Each structure stands twice: as structure tokens, then as C-alpha cells.
Length: 167
Image (cartoon, rainbow, N blue to C red):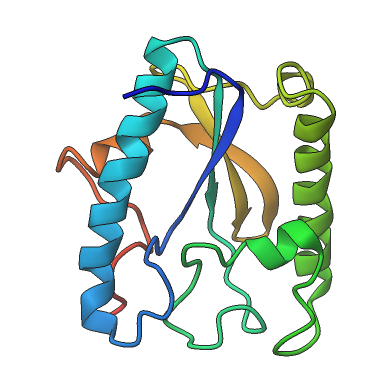
């Protein structure tokens, strides 16, 4: 397999299923299959010195996720990245607008300088035992957590809070 060595941003969300996941009971299975893919890719890129900046999106906004149990599903952060979260299902909250601005600032830093832009803002590339950025958890716009959390779910060690069915 051939990988580009250009820097890359890789996202995950707490409910990493592809919408529409119309039946609650099928979401955890879809989530696990996608988590396996996103855990190995940054490891492979790291092995060939290709920078990967990882983040976990945990935001849950009713104007983006119309079904209350969907939460932060795959691609639900894109309206925040593009500043369009208030277009489809209602107005954005103040927190949602602030989160959108924070995400846009970081994406702009990456676009302006893919190698140094994010590290200059405290977001380092993937490395074993490193950290990832977390967007929208609770009342915090941007935080960090250990990358071991993202990998361990695929190795059967732990689950990610909020990633399963809310039954």
C-alpha cells in the first residue's frame, strides 16, 4: 500500500457511524468497523514519517443531528467546519458558533502551513503515546486526550463514552 507523505487531518466522532443510521441497534456495529480502519491508518502513516493530526468530535447539536440519539456521527462536524450549521434545521447556539470558529481557525492554520500551522497552535501530529484534539466535549470548545483511548477500543480494551447505543 502506498501512502502520501503530505500532512493530513484525520477525524473521528463519538458515534462513528455513517448517517443515516436509522435503527439504533445497528449503529454500534457500524461504529466498530469504522474505528478499526481509523486506528490503523495513522499508525501506518507514522511508520513512514507522514504527519497525521487526529481529532475526536463529540459535539451534539439538535440542528445538525435531528435524531436525539445520533449525537456526533461521522461527518456531523462538517457544518461547523464550513460555518453552515444553522442552514438546515434551525439556528446555532452561541457555543456552537464559538466551536465552529475554533474549528475553522485550526483548519485555516493547517491550510496555511500543513507542517507547522497546527503544532504552533498546540496540536501535534500523531505519535505513539501522544495526544489528539477533542472538539465540543461538554462545555469545552477544544481539549486534548491521550491517543491510547482511540486505539484501545479497537483492541477490545475499553469503549469510548457515548459511542454505543444509548439504550
